[in-house]
Each structure stands twice: as C-alpha cells, then as structure tokens.
Image (cartoon, rainbow, N blue to C red):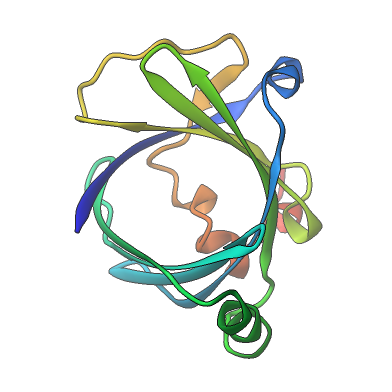
Length: 156
C-alpha cells in the first residue's frame, strides 16, 4: 500500500515534446466509482491492475500489481468500461521530481496534462514554463471520468 500525492496541470505549447520520448498506454476501468477505482492498463508489453481510494486534497491510497499482459488485453476488450483511454506518456525529469505528460487520443484527443507525484502535499517543486493552470481538484480531468465524459464532448 502506498499513498499517492499528485498534482495535475494543463500543458501549454509544445516545448515539452523535445524533452522525452512517449510510451503508449491503453487503460480501462473495471470500476470507476470515486471511492474505489479499479483500473487495468497496458504499457508496452507489461500490464497492471491498480486500485485507488478516494482523493482527499491531492492524496489517495493506491495499490498496484503487475498482471499477465494477455489477461489485461482480454479484460480491456471484454470487461472494461468504454471507451478505452488511449494516450502517450512522456516522463520528464526536472530537479528532484519527474513530470508525467499525458497526451490523449481518440475521444479525448486534444487533451494534454502534466502530473507531478510528490512526497508530501506541501513539497516545493519547480513549475516548468510549459506547465499551465492547475487542475488537481477538477474531477473532469480524472482519467476515470474521461471515460464517461470524454474531453471532445466538453463545451469549451
């Protein structure tokens, strides 16, 4: 068991693209209730089951386990809520933190967010020039909510 302390921001411009190579993710939810989300995902040839508790502030409990890749692919196709989340993740080291930039595709095309995982809620960190508005407390941007309410359907 681990506590996940994470802050999330919108991304500005394309400067971040030259800082890392993306990795393709496919993920789905077996349960997207905010009290306990159950997510499955493939990352290249690996697969994971993740259970997350309710978010309080920017902190929540998280449990993650590697599972057989073929099982995950089958669950994504047959059991997961639709649509499946498709994205590329770029990991960008900046000082003592690593930013994870997610560029979404499909029904969430056009959405690009940056997350930073922290050791404490009050940990100081540098905010690169390509990091914009904070969206940590906006549930529309939770991956689990992007299934039921995809970004391309939002009224701008």
